[in-house]
Length: 116
Image (cartoon, rainbow, N blue to C red):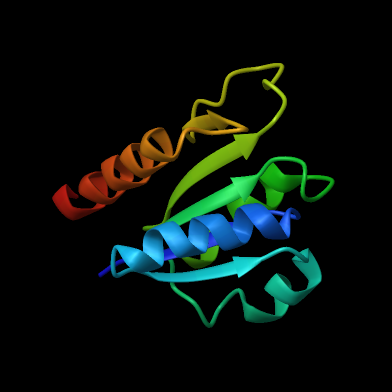
């Protein structure tokens, strides 16, 4: 199955996403502290990354850093706030999110990866 990365400072959201996708047979790694993630960035090769926009001061820069290390990873940005400018490079989902919508977004990203 696929590898899914979650960066969100809300431990409850991390646990929920981990449970949802682990039940579907995926390997999920969650980080609610960016400093722990920085130590692990090269060890886990995610197919899809879910990133809380406000977890870090410049989350878009962190996403691009991960994409440089793992160029095939698809990124999805999450936030309770609507972004001031639309994201061109990454899909966006608002929090609180509908679980089915989140799953569809992740699986659509995985399909794109499979067809590339």
